[in-house]
Length: 363
Image (cartoon, rainbow, N blue to C red; front, side, top):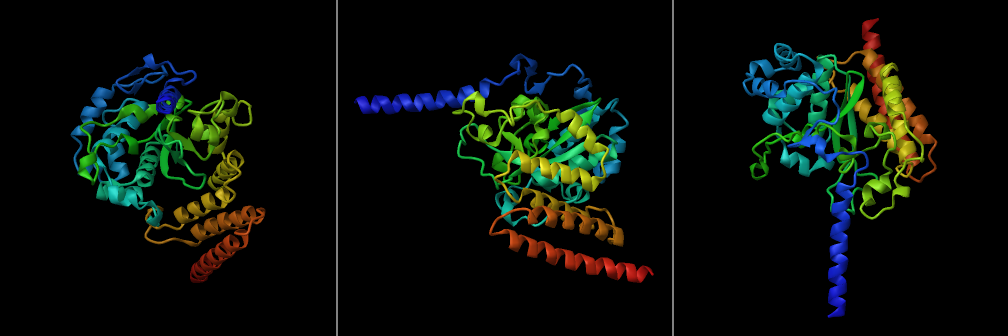
């Protein structure tokens, strides 16, 4: 009897820990949320009811490309807040989450281009984040693609350091960076049992201290918090003391860091982001190489470059990134290092042949 009471008490304590982990978010006034709408920043202004209603009547022709969709949004949006709201609502209503593809993430060899996702009206988180970034780019709104980890409140065994399982975005509006996860706002699934009646706006311009409860980016700057969570605190925060929470126990000027990247060359900005990801989570030894290789795939993907064929300059940029990836991987003392370098060398050899062939034709 005593043993049974003890077990019941431990279970109740466990449940209380999980629930308080969600409610005790430093700096978050829950009264600032109305039906999932984050109103924590008074700078956020826009007639979102009007925007949502206009997106409901968008025609297939108006949403055929990023340019046509943005052109349509420009007819009724009065500021960038309304534009990103339109993009979020469009994805939430018009794009279906590909449940089968999502179940087999390890088999995904490439992410769809924005054009492909708009055409099929179907995709997973990476496809959606690529689309959202492309829409923002077309509308001249600074936006970044973010990769990281996710978990639910009770999943204290997740995530694993190497299991990057999700992608989302950050946008800059009126000198302020905001978090957006359009995938988690979607209401339609190919597995129709998961369909929900309305778009979820909880992850639209989300409050950082709410977002961090289930999203951890590999790059700590994308937490948009002056005192970022560590990987271990994100994983175990229901059971962890606050002293284990802070990354380096120092204040991070994420605003300056992200703004500085906007002024860097694209390849230098992605390297800086990869290095910040490694310093944040050094146990994931090959994260820099993995991130840089992902961007090589982006550069050499004809559909994502929106070209009929690649040119020599595309290959030169890809080779530059590959050589930097090799330099970073070579610094790591690990039994897998040599194999990773051989793989990169093979990639360099193949792309360099294509570059040389194109330059020969040109001359």
